[in-house]
Image (cartoon, rainbow, N blue to C red; front, side):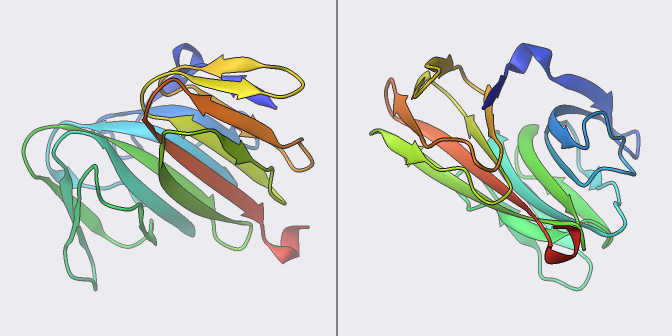
Amino acid sequence: MRILRVAGYRVMPWKNGGGTTTEIAVSPEGAGLDDFDWRVSMARVESSGPFSSFAGVDRTLTVLEGEGIVLDIAGRPPARLTGAAPPFSFPADVPTSADLIDGPITDLNVMTRSGRTTHRVERLVLSAPLDIEAGAGTTLVLPLGGQVAVTGDRPDRLGPLDALLLDQGAPTLRLEPAGSTVLFVIRIDRTAAND
């Protein structure tokens, strides 16, 4: 179990230079934009425009803050994403542009390299204790707001946007929110070819 504090996240420019992204976690550690197996980040989107392209990468996007965004993905009907919408998955190497609905947004972006890793993103409203079990790969837990107590062998506390990172074989942990909070649970698995 590791806790990653929001103050320690790395801020870096977008691949297309159109803004900045805050990297929460990446594997392998220290990997760049072209050689990661998986990456979890947040981006502040200040204006409408094209998305960066990532060859051979699958992406899931969720709106954390702001009114929302409409994605125009080549070959698909437009997708309207708001803070209440479920996480939205699409290939990161297909031409994609975005139109802001009403002002800037912050989004959560989960990317995995096809053929190496896969991912699932759940958005939960947490108002009672929840047990989190480590999966076969990596599990990342991210509360959007409020304090969440982590109980187990090493009790600790997550603040807003702090991340809890569990690797395979980690003990089950109990999360206890101080009130109602939105919680993201991201599960990343290696594909069979990479086991």
